[in-house]
Image (cartoon, rainbow, N blue to C red; front, top):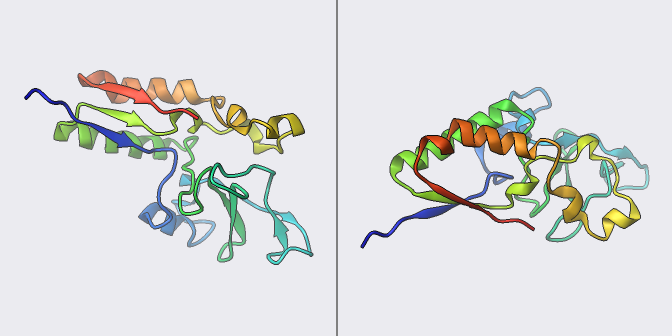
Length: 172
C-alpha cells in the first residue's frame, strides 16, 4: 500500500517518571541534574515552601511554569504539565541522547517525525521575569530561543540528513 509512518516526537520535555528526571531530582549533584532546568526560588517567608518561583513564567496548561521540589528545595521548569519537566537543550548530553533516540526510530523504519513544540527547545537567555507586555503573549517569548536554529541544524547534521525522512514542526 506504500504507506509511510511518521511518529510524534516530543523532545522539549520528558515525563517526571522518566529515569533521567527521577535521577535529576535525587540530588543537586546528580549527573542527570543538568538534563533539566532547575533554579533556586526567591525567598519568601510567607510562602508555604519558603520560596516563590524563580520568575513569573506560567504554564500553557495553567499556573506557574515552575514546580517546587521538596527534596532539593529548588524549582524545575515545565512549560506544560507539572508531570512534563522541560529538558535542558543547552546540555550537549541531552542533545546526544535525543539524537540517539531519533536514530533508534529511524533505524526501525519510521519515515519521519512530527516534532511537538519544537520552537521552544531553546529557552530565553537568563530566564528573566516577563514584562507586562510579554505576559500578554508568552509563547512569543518562549519560542525561538537564542540557540533554536543552532540545535535544529545540529539535529539535521547528526541525524536527519543521514536518512530519507520528512519532518514537520508543531508550534504554538
